Image 1: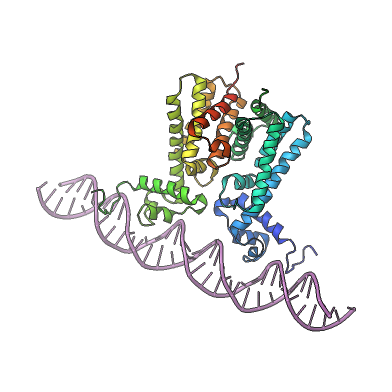
Image 2: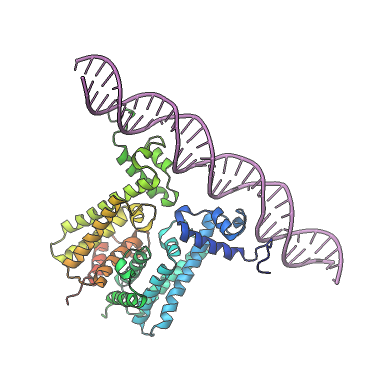
Length: 195
Length: 195
DNA sequence: TGTACATCAGTGAACGCGCGTTCACTGATGTAC
DNA sequence: TGTACATCAGTGAACGCGCGTTCACTGATGTAC
């Protein structure tokens, strides 16, 4: 039954989110349109309205979903690291960069666009969960000041943004394990200092 | 003669660049259109073609101009700092952030858009000048490795991007001199270490 | 100083296009009895 | 188990809009003589 043509899609909401991310990746947010997303999902161009209202509604839902995946990318690295708080903080930083490299279009939607409605309840909750995770990690590693927290966030964010945009060519051209080693070196410089 | 209505504008190229930046600031790159820029500059919507070809041509020229102003913002901070190489490097970082806060729309055009043609000769020269400046500053301050260079770039970029987007609310709410002190503290952690 | 002419910058009407939105509709699904 | 009906998801045609592009044009400027 999976390949028969059905009137009701069955899981159009999810299909539209995937199509939207693919559109962002291929054509960029500047050329994003609801009609192109619907076409990619194989559905008439008026169908998305049932699920998301308009294009910004779809992008808002996609951004909320993106923040959850963003946290998952960090959790995946943390699970592989030793439980030491500093190692966990470095792992979160590596996950931050992983996400930006693996989903650059989504990364830009989260951090560099004003189209999602960041006042939306679901999206703002997802974004705050991500922020809270950072604060907790820094705190567990001994960070106490605004500077501690901002330093770690900024360096992770800067590396992620520059790498996903194809700048920082030196690091970008390293094999994965070499890249991880250099990134770990950099993150280590920013670890909160013992008082 | 300045307020009389003339057929020839006189300095339409510059006026279009200014109008384009204002449009970016007000409506975002996602809604950028040549017609709106022309209207803002008080000129018919076909006029920009004489100077820039199309919208991407205009954005490319604006980006090249932006990179030069980006370097100027750093130079302004460097001129006020002591000549010590580490102090100069920190000053460059503060200028990086200044630019992002003062011209957020332009900052996003330079670092977060794919609409400018980065293969354009003038733009790529301007972008490379900015990159070279960074490398030289890091080198003068004793940086020798890819990690030294990337760390400094990433933290400056991350602070600039997050602050200009209104994240990092703690630092963003400080008065200017307090903000500079916190940023200087953060940059100092990333200064190349003596071997 | 004056005239003729070439070049250039900007105009404004016209065009075709893809967009979001609306709306009457149709087919599928779920539920009451 | 069957029937009737309400609700829901998706269709497809229609619309008006702003967009980029084209093009014949006009007014301004510069230059040759």
